[in-house]
Image (cartoon, rainbow, N blue to C red):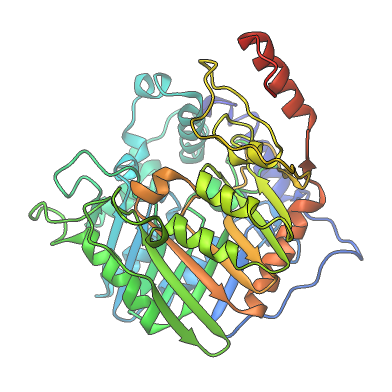
Length: 472
């Protein structure tokens, strides 16, 4: 990945192309382009890589396909007259920070909860710290420093940081912020929520972090369109109350108060809550759950239960799938048409249930196999990974069941999400909403690599040479 000092040669070129109107990345007019679908009046759905829309990236000034998820956030914040509660793992979008600051200065109550890894401004990190990070973290901070280096002189000045470092901006404006160390610990697994509650009546939630890479794309990779994500805008006071209750558990008495915030598994059991709206039934569940919670009462158990009800089809678009119980539920329902897409960086890891679906097992780096692994006796070929631009990930966490039911949230289908992380999950019964997810899945599936891909075969060959085994 390019470092922040190369922005003068690469990042500025992209900006110049955008300003000339030459960069229409990811979008070409075609008679075969899908048409925008009608939105439900209470539950609207938005995808940052949708081929039905296009917009200008407000930072890179690049015209690209997709819906502007940051604008969805801004529009929701703009409607606030009483309060805005934000709980998101990571936030680095300056326009969102400015919108929150403007509301606070107008007398609106603004509260922000972040994961402790991202609760301080990135511009305060020094170069030695960045060099010591893994390649993913180094790339993240290289992109952020390039983004902040407005005049491309190789440095981020205090003035530049005050315009581009969103968390620094919030701190400087005295916006109250809590992270998952406010309970007196070193932090939960992850404070992994991605939601906003406005005026106790509107919820915006989904799979997207409020970041450049989560919504628009990596600063140093012009062709990047951001990790494939969705946001939902839901008008329901009853649902907003459920999210506000979850927020208040984590908030406690706020910053500088007693360590009475609740993050991770110390939270009390939050039972399923079902909300009815015209045309919709929405069920919400929050994670994590204590280890002794009955499986069927956990979020992963609820996902499995929803999948077990499938009569005809299940389409899964997931960042990760490592929960054995969910895989076993799918294996027990062989009559349905099952299609599964998982991010390329996770799909063939030794504990990925995609391998089970393919009837395979792969060892880890120690040549050990996952405990209780259960490769399917009747493998399927309709599992694989989508083709995405360099730098982008399949960050979705959704299932579409029988083209009618949508399962979506911040919750990855993993043990960590179930038992450690702060998460939320929605199950939405609505045919109009489901069609949006159908269109998104078909877009991703159309160019996906499926079955025993070349990438998988190479992985198998490498592990066979390393571990001296033919157990594939």
